[in-house]
Length: 146
Image (cartoon, rainbow, N blue to C red; front, side, top):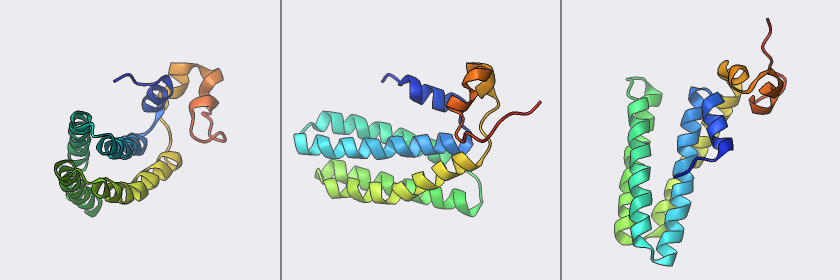
């Protein structure tokens, strides 16, 4: 799968919360595509999308392997989402993917807000040059001071 240049720039310049937001956004996109696969009876593509989604869910479980409450809740949600998408694939039921989207959307929005509130990586100016710093930062009023 080819990564678009804008996504690549975002990955290179975002913070930890932004990386989690990107994973959650990808899951939501996968689930929308899974619904289309069921409608089009493209079950081979459905299986591939679900396998990719499981990989992302495993990454989330790994990233939130701590003993704090947030980590525990993210792991519980990830396991539940895995159960839903497995059921959706097996039964060819789009409602399982709708439910998954409804669960993950607020999580993605929360991490997107954290992405904006936390400082971006300092590598932004180094990678893209000082003139492009504002273009790739998440808030225009942020600047690096010498």
